[in-house]
Length: 379
Image (cartoon, rainbow, N blue to C red):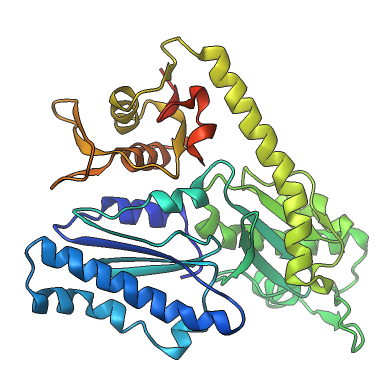
């Protein structure tokens, strides 16, 4: 899978088993260095097997449990990598994601999946999407500051001709395609004028918007439109996604390389992220010391679990092991991982996200007040 949504996060969050294995690895994309990818994964799998043995599993049971990951080791699998690989295995499921983040190597075995490294994708300043749209082509990309990858689309018309034929099979269309240089086609209905053509575009864009809903629903990532100038206001009219940015990438996206598209998209996304994050930090500073903020594990974790956290700052480079008992509303914190422990920072972030809050996954020094965790509360 080359995309990760809040629905995927929810699925992994709700998975529970006595043995849940989480593996993260950076991936090389180019050159001879790509030969290190299978070796790196085998080493991490070996670490997971050692942890399973330490938990009391027999060598045979550990080998059988890890077999689905061994079966991923195929030519086709290694030809479709991004900057990072995340694998989640339990006795009843295997899920993996090829994602545009170079994860540090990590293997965790516990009674639920370890998901904090993925929070960068759900973070308030982590992921954005680009809709590259012309009359000839529809493409969607997911990106971070580091990379941009195309997302495979389903239930989306491939171009305006397909959209209008589906919209009105009786409609007679003439497609005046460009020359061999690949210019955009222009489609006219019978007796079409400018208003007719705009209505055709609006119908096309509404179908695109509807098809994107399954991918974008419950997301908060900004969406950047890439297309010729006159299409942008028409798409805004058709759009129902609340995080479509007002400005877009101007020009025919078919003429841009992936690197050029990424550069222009990040020039739009970065100021948006910086402004949103800066405003949130200022808001926290205004509320600091009141009942609307919390900055200890003991206060933030229960608040996140009981849907009270509006915004969370959590360090991506720190782990706090312990046990949270929601029935007794009690927390135990341990210096080292013990049996039954989970990463309490991970727990707080996951519950914040799945309950509609915003998470900023930052380095430890960027957490407000330089605390282990910090939150703005709903009440």
